[in-house]
Image 1 (cartoon, helix red, strand yellow):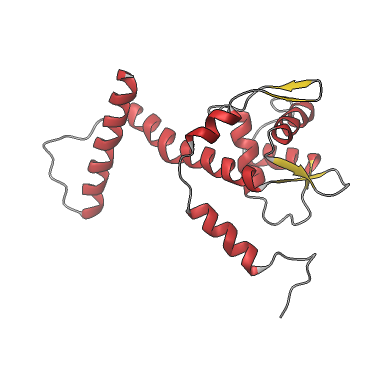
Image 2 (tube, rainbow, N blue to C red):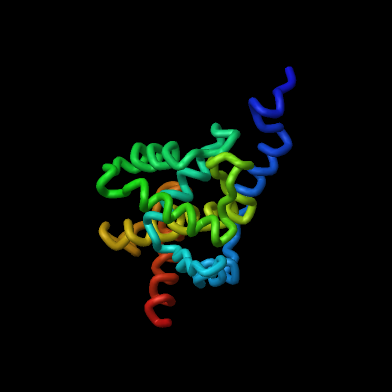
Length: 183
């Protein structure tokens, strides 16, 4: 059965998106470029920092919005962010969201869908969103978690491959932390 072009994305586009999700690598020049302010006309937009929680939440919602083929309206995005992250409208207002959307658009990470006020990530936006999310979920999360839990006993001999891999990963993360502290 064939899908109508409007009702669902093509399997090739979906497969391409899945391949892009699995092929994320750190692109430091890209991170440096989007951290710099940009000017559009007479308006200057600040850079997007990898540690900005508001931006990470927004990018995560936009990235996981594969079911919205025609793009997201600002109200849909706002509701999705509030629901996903259990926030109140006082903690993240619609005006804050609109500011964040303008900033993403100015950096070329977001585009309007035709003449409607519906938004979707650009190819560059998907790349940046994946990079930000993987950075936070795979590096920052384990680093923060390891700071609040006891360190593994180095004399302990793991009795499973999974536990051995955990000890190896924990040691590697500790080395990264030490290198970052020395820098």
